[in-house]
Amino acid sequence: MTLWFVFALMTAAAIFAVLLPLGLRGGTQTEGNETTVYKDQLREIDRDLGAGLIGAAEADAARVEISRRLLAVADHDRNPPMQSNLKLRRSAAVLALVGLPVLALAVYLSLGSPRLADFPLAERARPPDTTQPLETLVAQVERHLEKNPTDGRGWTVLAPVLARLGRYDEAVKAFHSAISYGGDSADRRADLGEAIAAAAGGVVTAEAKAEFERALAFDADQAKANYYLGLAAQQDGRSADAASIWRAMLAKAPADAPWRPLVQAALTRVDGPTAPALADSAVAAAKNMTGNDREAMIRGMVDRLATRLKQNGDDVDGWLRLVRAYMVLGDRDKAISAGADARQAVANNAERLRQLNEGLKNLGLDG
Image (cartoon, rainbow, N blue to C red; front, side):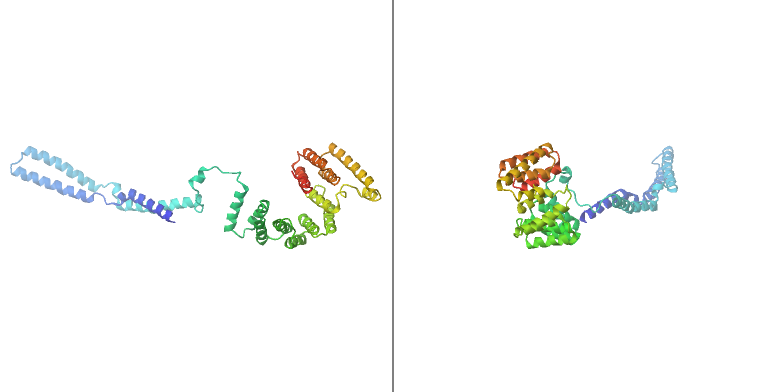
């Protein structure tokens, strides 16, 4: 506000400096004085001539010159210049004094940005940074939310980023705010439960479990909530319940569901590693075999699977089954080699590579 006052004062001073002469009265008084002086000079010539101080010729010449000047002044009085119109000049001064600032303000309010925050010179000279660190962007969103704490969209954006950065306690608070100000949903409840579990070191606590159950109340097929409820059952020692939940997920899921490898690996942990790799008929036949025969049958199936994958390496689920089989048979080196071959086979497909890496991580072959 002080800056606006200073600008207004400077504008007024500049206008006054230019227009003040227009408001002053002209030389009327000076012109009247000149007429009196010239008449006095004519009388002095007559006195000097009568006293014999000057000759007649000199007196006539002086009268002519003074009379010429007197006529010029009289003519000026009868025909004053237009600039001498005091009323017109003062009107122009007032119009300029009031009109110019009003016009300037009107143009600025329509074209300018009076509410725009200050932009220091150092910031103007700095080129825009389109590759700011994630932490910097998070800090910007946090500053925005400090001023706008009820911005549900902002909390919805911030919460998963905080979880990605490992700031789980803050992510839990952000998810709560996203639900409070952005609305409740199955995905938001599942995300909140996941953040609570992550903050507890991966343990599905009672609080996290409650959030997953709320998510299923919105959507019974919410994948993340179902997975974590299965994990909660496994952590409680109810492996059969966990396997039942995960089997139901796989039965309903499309073949290209991105979370299939994760759930299949989890099912392997609780249901035995051979189950995913064997067909139902093979499992039934294996029940009547001796231990050596069963192991030979499994190795034969593993070899056939490895041969098939060498011919068609796009099958991520197949690679994960092969790695699991090697792990169960105790051939960790072969499992590591198969994982490397799998990464090479799907290297050109970013989504399959991501699914593969998640599955291998759950099998203990991260990196």
